[in-house]
Amino acid sequence: MKSDTIVIIPTYNEKENIEAIIRAVTSLEKPFDVLVIDDGSPDGTADIVKGLQKKDELSERVYLVERTGKLGLGTAYICGFKWALENGYDYVIEMDADFSHSPNDLPRLYAACHDEGYDVSVGSRYITGVNVVNWPIGRVLMSYYASAYVRTVLGISLRGLCLPD
Image 1 (cartoon, helix red, strand yellow):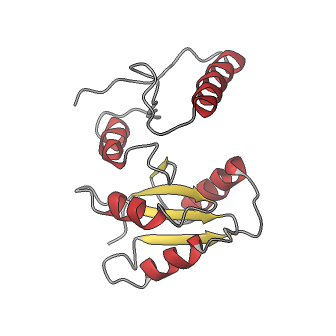
Image 2: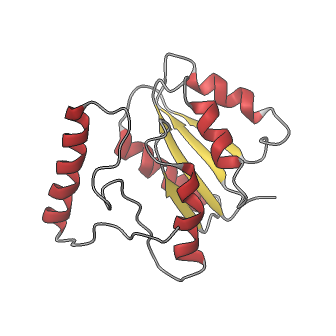
């Protein structure tokens, strides 16, 4: 049965993570479908996804769009959102393949929109301070300040909602 929600996961060279992240998302109690947008990963990421698509329990829940070349994160999300709309999904969630976003947060993000009626649900690793694991300090600083820059340029004061556990 098709879910009402698709989780978009853009990839480039994520062979070490892709199966684990797909299984983590699809094993949640609330069923989520997964759309992988692969930017021509030379490490075989797309082949792993194709193998998972052949598994009975995942055959109708995992989708793949293969793009030629590394076209970028932003265009991967745009591609994924267009695909989700064309395929009738009510809710679209985006996350990284490297577990920097926890799949366990997906049901709460979904519930904020579906059950509580919000139009948008935002998860942030900076709500309760900096909450990242195994990131070099340069990446942490770039991510934190890029987020602050975007909020300033767009005039958005929202930093995320801290949902109760």
